[in-house]
Image (cartoon, rainbow, N blue to C red):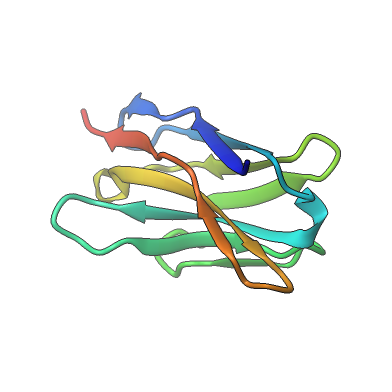
Length: 117
C-alpha cells in the first residue's frame, strides 16, 4: 500500500520559514518523481515544485528563489524548504509521487500552511 505522509505545516509570520517533509512508503522511491502542489481556498491546485528521480528540479515562478525542494532516496523522503513566506503562500500543501514508467500518481493527505501576522 502506497502512503505519503506530510509533516511540518503550521502558522508562520510573513517573512518566516517552514520546512515540509513527506515520508513515502510502499513504493520503490528511486523510481518516482516527487513534488509538492498546493491549493488555496477557492483556487485550483497548483504545482509548487517537483524533483525528478535523478534530482532535476522545477519550480513555480511564484516560489523561485524562496523555496527549495530536495529528496533523500535513502530515507524515502522529499522536503520543501520555504523561506521568505508571504500571505499568498497560505494553502494546503500536498506531496505527490509519480511513477516514472507507468506515470501513476499518488497523493498525501495534505498539510496546512498559514502565513499571517
